[in-house]
Image 1 (tube, rainbow, N blue to C red):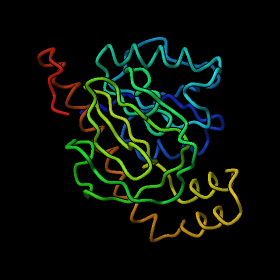
Image 2 (cartoon, rainbow, N blue to C red):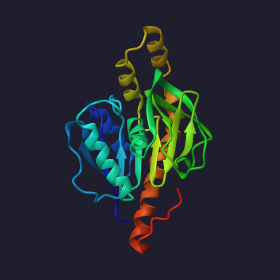
Image 3 (cartoon, rainbow, N blue to C red):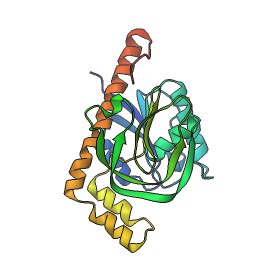
Length: 238
């Protein structure tokens, strides 16, 4: 079976950890593009698209964000399966007509997320699952026609619309990344230590269940690719 070719839009300003995590978790050939450096694909010749997290907000006035939105919009319109994680989740929501807003608070640490819809992205994942979260923006309004597939007491944590899937949590994180990211946050000492104390082997193992979203996404991309090749149809169940 021909290996998947996926455009990996790396929106992390210091992308080394992001690169390591996504390359470990995705069973595909990732063609990486440094979005913050203005490096975007000049073609849509990919089987799918993955958009990473970022320390920026999708509504900030940074010169790299509008062209990134435009390319992702073109990919969605072309019918390419897309997966957005954290900032990528918010970017997809924005591109598809949803609304992203500041929560006026910060969710961070290993927390419980609950499935709120029926999506193959979560096949094999429990109705309630543990995941590492770190965000102060939220998808406050879903895009028109989108279905919520995950949420918790802070915000929406997952949606899908057509071939586009977004998750707010970070299924790709290893414990090292969780610790590094946490130490870089401007939190009061007590809360910072509380989050760091929660980065344990037990919590990391529990969060590994959520990594199935990558396997499920790749399976979906293969089905779309193979069906397109056979019949020109994109009618694959999401």
